[in-house]
Amino acid sequence: MKATTRDDGTQLPPELDLDLVALARSGPGPYDIQAELPAPWMATVLAHTDAEVTSAGSTKLEVTPIGEGSSYLVRGSIQGGYSVPCARCLAPAAVSAGGEICVHFVRDRVGDADDEETETESPDERSFSGTRIDLRPLITEQVLLSYPIRALCAYGEACRGLCMRCGAELNGQPPGPCAACGAVDAQVPIAADADLEEPARPASSWQAALKQLADSGVGEGDDDIGADNLEFAGPIPGVDDFDPGFEPEPDPTPARSGKPAGRSAAKPTGKPAAGKPAARSSAGKSPAGNAASRSSKKPPSKKKQ
Image (tube, rainbow, N blue to C red; front, side, top):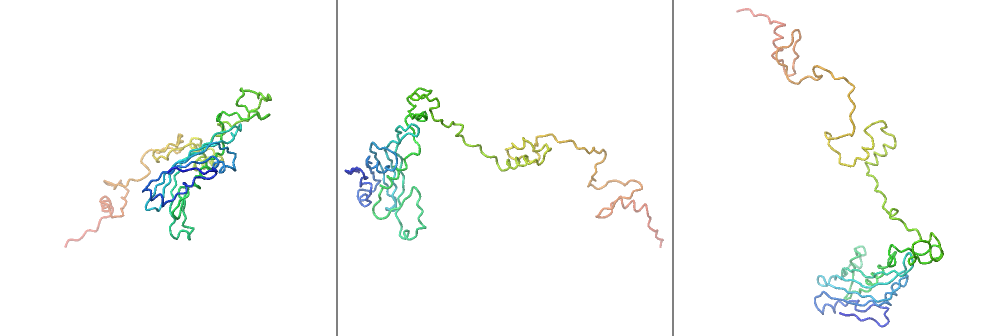
């Protein structure tokens, strides 16, 4: 369906106000919508800015019904453009008003109008009621969103701007002092890439805690708190595999020779040493202990009957 432009050019074509009943009679869909965006209309939309519109734009949309008319998916694009002053030299800088559109229109359900808390519209979802969907506010919004915060002329980042002394344009001049006033420092300084770099990421929580301990003097003189430990960023190894990064100091206690300090848990075998009774176990007397007891005290002999 081809739209026609109004005579005054300050209004969008009425075909962008969709008649859903008429579309349903034309077939099951999807429906193609094409319309011209007049230059006077774009100038009216951008009247509160410094944009200059010299040519008309256009839009091409596809409307797809979903379900039994409960919702409609509108997809398409906008073509057009205008110019704004360059941020450095004030020459015209071209801006594209084109962009992609994808919006889901959902019909209002009965009772939703009385309950405002149930409205959960997202930027890509809008509601409608009745038998019409007006796409003109959507097109107007897209043109307004295309206005840039900062734009540069055809020179791009190489634009030298205006002379700080006399205001002459420096793009057409050879490098060096301003040809109009002879000022050496004619060009406005531009921030270097190094000044625009992102700040370094802060250290992790455990690195910050270790650094705070080192700065406060806790553990001074200890070899285990040093730069190597502060820079450790890997996973914590196991106890057996842990490498502290330094050699441990030797044990000042001299090693003892002979039998180990701890007693063996095994039962003693053989007879005990002479003159020393065997130790009694908690479960009863050992055979060696019984022999020692019999040698030290003989039981009284019984008389023969």
